[in-house]
Image: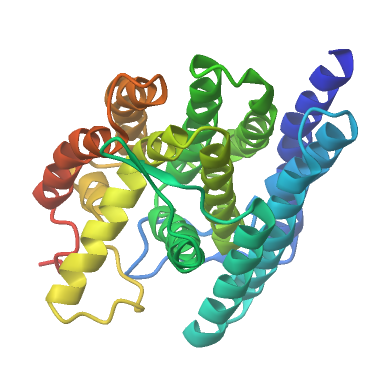
Length: 338
């Protein structure tokens, strides 16, 4: 157990110090995100800091595999697509990659991760087990690509994406515990600790942003962790979808509304519900803390009920999402400013 504690400590300390070093390097080389009309921040701030927690987590995960705490199959399923998405995001942070090539890279990474994790497990639905077979690879690929992109969309105010990842990972670990699979908790816990090290620098007011490199990695990695959880216990996939409800609902509602209104959905904007809310309440911190409160008070208990079999996964998802949808529409998700 001593080696386990050292490895988990490495995840946190590595990200904490790595982010500090990256921040110093970016400031000295003027690698700064300058606010524009579509930004939710007002001060020039370094970006690309997510690389620090990516490296720290992957190193920690490899050590967990070497000590038998995590299966190597999961490490490969996370590291290969995760590193690919991080590289794409880092290049896009400091130069521009066209949408078509970025999406192509995302789909290649998603399919690779899906194959390495074993595909999409049978999904429990209304008391039945639905096996999508080959269609599961199609559905699973779009799921991973959407999750990694929506995570990028939702990384728009200080601390929000970091707090969401920490909550989802610790919540996912708790679902393993309550459903009797405690041996699978260390991967999500290591990721939560790595992101916590970064959060020290990203908490409002942020001194560095994670950038597309970090947000894309978190999106696809959380997706892979949720698919792996489904192989352990099919009900846990519903649990992970509930835990990620705030991000999934806000991003999806915003996309749907913008599509209906004929907007160019690939063009940068600031019309997510959380962005309207941050402007209405005069800052990032109230919204970041409010999302954390919704996660803990509303979503986590529902996810636990699903994980222990006291609530059907689909109905649990509906119960969790309906108020979130109403809240997103209340804050004008997808509506054009003005």
